Image (cartoon, rainbow, N blue to C red; front, side, top):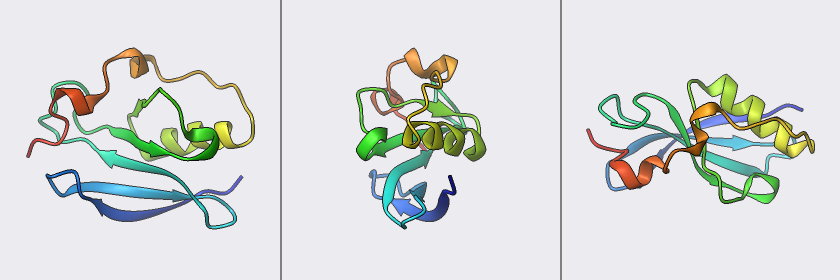
Length: 101
């Protein structure tokens, strides 16, 4: 499965660096936000801000890089059962000041 990342700014109140992830049919399947380096929970990591279709759910994991995020998203879209990253059990960074500058 080919996924296409497209940079975008996400209006989180802190002008966060974001990435839209599009599937092969150019449908939006996920929005990732890069967490601030000062973030107390997952500094510099990518956070699943929103997922659509099979990506939608209760879990909003973080990923150390975009390749890992796209791999996880691709697994979900193809019906794979790849486990979440180890840090996905934490409280979502949004509850921990994720976008501080």
